[in-house]
Length: 341
Image (cartoon, rainbow, N blue to C red; front, top):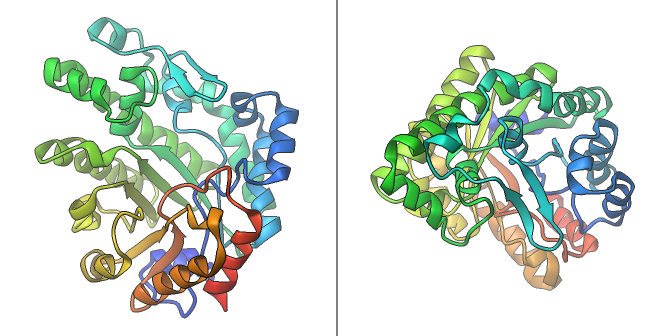
């Protein structure tokens, strides 16, 4: 095993941490904007294997990251299950809503997702052929809770209020939706692995709004079920889990779910995470993405501080969330220089 990401995920402490960035294929890059314009719109780009592979490869050519992550979107899965999905310019995704049993009954069975998602699997196959041999290919999906929040509200919401309300008012419908998403996510990620993904990542972007037993029931339990099923189908498959803004619940998350690595947002200090989370294995993170906008000495200093904080255990350097469209591409070079020396 020579790929540095796979070595870190297996628990090895490396002298220089491997690095990639969440949303490393994105609007901050002029070549991405050009390819997206060629596709016509965001969903057309996601479902065009040649163009989706191209934008996945673009940041590799520019920066030489240690991993590529499949270019797709977490909301392709609900669309494959029968939800209407579209994007409003400047406002983000919109979906048909799940407000009760009748809406849930209109969704397709988990077995029906692959027809819609076939272009995504083809993108993975192209990438597995075209990536440099030292680069790891990461597949991904949204975690059931996060995907459910969009399906219930029909859009992103600041507090995930509609999902919390349905959870309180109609626990049976809510639990059935989580169950369907859990099973469909297993099948979706498994198909990505069969197409060539070497690692998968589970993005629970809104995990932080779950508290107490709800966090255990709807962040921990589905992740544990997904990871166990994937590892049973694909022995040795490494899984990264990202329960964003979990704060103190990052502690023990890897052991509770079976994840090989826990990705950290930038609301937790690297020193604290090294002492409380990295003791269980690999961690990923956790530079503040805003530093790639502002740059300067603060970017270099904070990058080096994070590398040092995690230097006594397995670590994959990454951001605490996705790179933003207003980031300066030159600042990514400065970050990499600070990591690699």
